[in-house]
Image 1 (cartoon, rainbow over the protein chains, first blue to last red):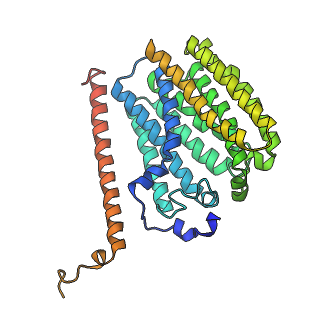
Image 2: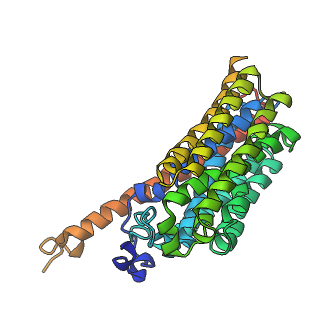
Image 3: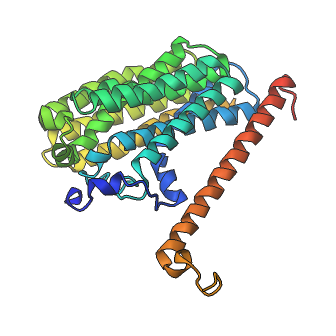
Amino acid sequence: MTDSVIAPEIMDSPVSSGTVRDYVALLKPRVMSLVVFSGVAGMVVAPGHLHPVLALVAVLCIALASGAAGAINMWYDRDIDAMMDRTANRPIPQGLVPADEALAFGIILTIASVTLMGLALNWVAAGLLALASGFYIFIYTMWLKRRTPQNIVIGGAAGAFPPMIGWAAVTGDVSLASIVLFALIFFWTPPHFWALAIFRKLDYQHAGVPMLPVVAGERETKKQMLIYTLILLPLAISPYFLGIGGLTYLAGSTILGLAFVAYAVQVLRSEDHKPAKRMFAFSILYLFLLFAILIGEHLAV
Amino acid sequence: MTDQQNPGPARKHGGDTELHRRQRGKNLAVLAALFAFVAIIYVVAMVRMSGGTFP
């Protein structure tokens, strides 16, 4: 296994042999892309207008803060990352970036992005950005992740903040519509992560992370996934009734929601991991398309 | 022995020069990031002071 070949002293080595690319990898670029996209959606659907330069700065701040939180997460989780196949090739377990440097990198980027958001946009958006980072680092990574199978349910709130931050960047406040966008990602996160946890169960078990499939079994996890997709179905449609989504969104969110439920039923009825893999891939497409329709409708008007 | 005759450990070992090359790359990236940060602060200040009419 991977952990047997990566010595702890390599991970904590003070010498950096990594390249710029390794530091970019610390920012979890793939996670960042969905975070940025949902943040942009919040900005686009929010009532009001932002100067294009300020809008770009807001997107940059959301991206950097998200990446910085990812770097701090990699610093804290370097021990279990080395044990899991999915994460063993990250820069710290590979000995490419010293752990302390990754932490400093994350802290500096967090402070810079929150400060810039406050100075360029407003302090409500900056406060929400700081709250999202703090929630991800302290509540999810340091407190919940290794202690409870509800880790990603509660911790999922961190990933749900971006559209609310985008909205606040434009309006300077938090409204019912932005709370609904928050709730949409909040209830999307458990079925998304549990689909991954089902086919990566052994990884989590090996690392001692109490994901739901490890603690409660696959059957119970699959039931919970179906429940969350059923909650998500009416919730995802609600932006139409709040006036931030049009008829295209109503049709799109209904079809996508029903497809998400269908995937969850397939997962529940199956004994192997293929449906869970398909559901994981679809969950990313689902969220991407929901926000793409919202953005498309607003830009088309 | 002069410095010209002895190129020093950095030039002696391929690993060291590779490490220095990577470090130079990172230093340049930090420099670029700092310049970008300064430029952003400047442009944001101009936009906010102009009441959104800049540029």
